[in-house]
Image 1 (cartoon, helix red, strand yellow):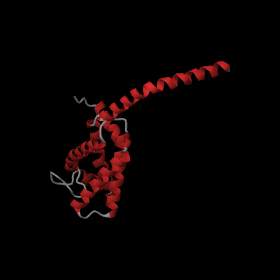
Image 2 (cartoon, rainbow, N blue to C red):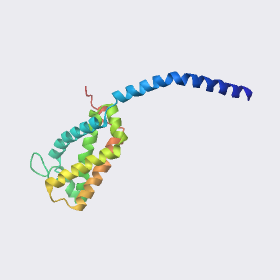
Image 3 (cartoon, rainbow, N blue to C red):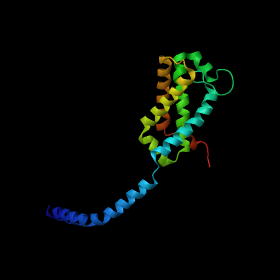
Amino acid sequence: MKDVKNDFESFKNDADQVSAGSSFVLNKIHSEIARTAPKKSAVAVKLGGIHLVSSFFTLMACPQFGTRLFFKGEGLMDVFMKISPMFCQAFCGAFYLAVTFILARMVLKYDEWLVVMRSRSLSIGSVALLSLGVFAMLAQGISWEAGVFWIFGALIAGEMASVSRMTLKKYFRFS
């Protein structure tokens, strides 16, 4: 028992002497990490750009609340509306946001993706609510129920797309 106490005392004395010199090194490391880490605002701008691109392609396949960019007809909405209107609203929201976060996972660098994951609820919620707000301004006739089902589907799909381990990078080789 006496040896353990002596070992601890010698360790404590050595740690006190080393900590004065190592604090400079640790401060230098922390400042370098802070300097090279991606800024939240830059990641938010990238995520917004990715969302605009994915929205462009998503709105070609599935008109959200009647908002369609190109082509005529109902697209995927016709297929899902045959199941039920509630399913169609939830799946359209899910499709819309899942494409954004799958694309973001493929495009963003690892450290940028970690910034998104640290504030995952805020990222998913803000993209979903901003999108619903834009659709409400464009469609001008969104019912309360349609908005709730759309946001429910969007939030669930955004969460699933952001935390799933499967990415398309595994299956497709991007250079």
